[in-house]
Amino acid sequence: MSEEYGGYQEVATKKDLKEGGMLKVEAFGKSVLLSMVNGEVYAIDAVCSHEGGPLEDGILDGFEVECPWHGSRFDVRTGEVRNPPADNPQLAYEVEIDGDRIMIKEKLQSEEQQPGVKEGPTLHELNLFQKNKVEGTDVMTFKFSNQEKNRDSDKRSLNYTAGQYAYFDIAGVKNDSKGPIRHFTLASSPTENFIMISTRIRDTPYKEQLASLEEGTIVKVRGPEGKFVLHDDFSKSAVFLSGGIGVTPFRSMIKNATDKRLPVKITLFDSNRNEQNILYKDEFDEWANINQNLVIVYTITDKEESSPPASEWKGERGRIDKFMLDKYLTKEELSNSVYYTCGPPGMIEAMQTLLQKDLQIPKDRIMVEEFTGY
Image (cartoon, rainbow, N blue to C red; front, side, top):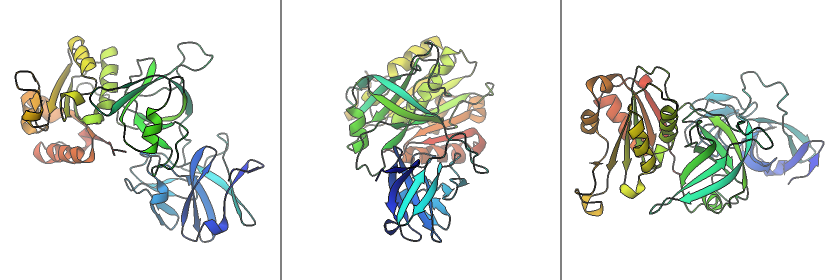
């Protein structure tokens, strides 16, 4: 349904929504979650503000909905965060019941926010100007112009901090179980004049639509968000531990640190199945040659018979472990660095065990960004 009545959109009827139940609808170009509690109907954004989880697949507990992915909880009346890891609230909508019809209305940015609710991140329109498939892999890289239309060439559309992510609405996505929007790390650096994302292309409606985008397509981007960013105290070294596509935020941070000549020692341990799957290797090698504070350690985990012979492969073999860290880090770096881990859930769990149990690193010096693989 999409009929409008004085700014309201009719999205459902009361018979579509049961007491204590939830329903996802589409309105104003977004997915919206309807819920009914004690006979009252409420509406908030259906895409979790933490990592894009589908709230309609979660649990409604009184006035709180719990995201099925990471357990964030939100008040369905206001969108306010009730339980982390989410930091940002869901946008709440005005609901009007007209007979049997359920209608909702967007709240204007100028309207007073509910107590404790922050304004959502800005929506940007970015132009896709280049896409490339990484040879021998299922990874594709997309570059978008980051200049505002009809503005001075130095004016950026999306301002962000290296390591943050944003939500991409590419339009035309139908029947995807995860919804029509995904979040991606901004693999580009704020020092570059474009926005870049890299992702594995899976056989989902969203990823298939993304892969088919033509150059010149305008996409809607909401953000930036995220706190997986480089620490401010450069007297402490940074140790990056990445697995596969989880290297994307580290490209952003390394490029930014290199361009700005930040006085911080960075060591990246980059783990991949094989040499072909090492993303950004040529760039990393180039930056390591000009940045004396940067060390890149590559390791591949495939068995030797399915990987380059020892005479050809000059990097490490096997998973990142204590022996590998001891080999490349000084005792001072091992004990006092800030550790950043990004990769699939299994890799994250292994790295947390390594850091907390084997190396006794305090939790406040361990930063984690989990790639959920969708």
